[in-house]
Image (cartoon, rainbow, N blue to C red):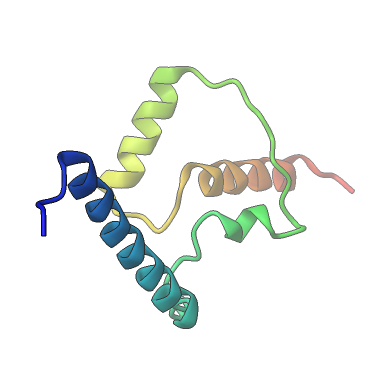
Length: 99
């Protein structure tokens, strides 16, 4: 039997990889997705899917934003920038509401 050409070898290699990809895809589809634990953050879907929050754009100096993010990271706070802005705005509203 003649040895396959370089193109035949390449085609066989692609077929092998394609077959392995199909097996891996079938295995992943059969496995249930991992569920986050009670203290594990759910990622981007948290506030984005919460109807109590709305996306808002603010203009903040780059230096201020960078320093605030760095301070939050250095303190290993369970708070991100949007949480900090929410907290500060809520405090301001409470202090200035005379109703």
